[in-house]
Image (cartoon, rainbow, N blue to C red):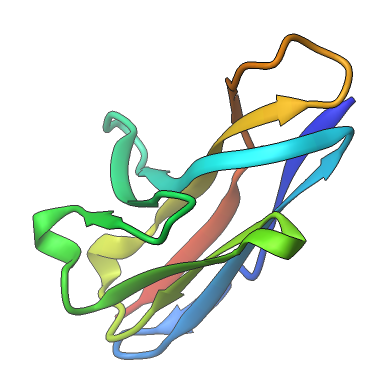
Length: 122
């Protein structure tokens, strides 16, 4: 009864920008750490960035300076601003979050979104 829904993916030219959004919906009591991962064809899923409820961020070293993660706790939403996109950024981007439900035990469980495609053309 809870889910993460991503939006904002699409096709952009190299050097362009995209802003991804991920909203947790359903019987959500609280959100904790949220983040973004990506997976390119033939490669393992890798961390892009994460952010704690208090706003502490963690980025993949190769993406620092180009990507910015943020969140709105009141909306249970995490964002990923992607600037200066490169063809190698092409991947399916997945939202990830630790959520506490209104009906379950008072602890956080980890959830994944369905993914949104980001394609950067050269």
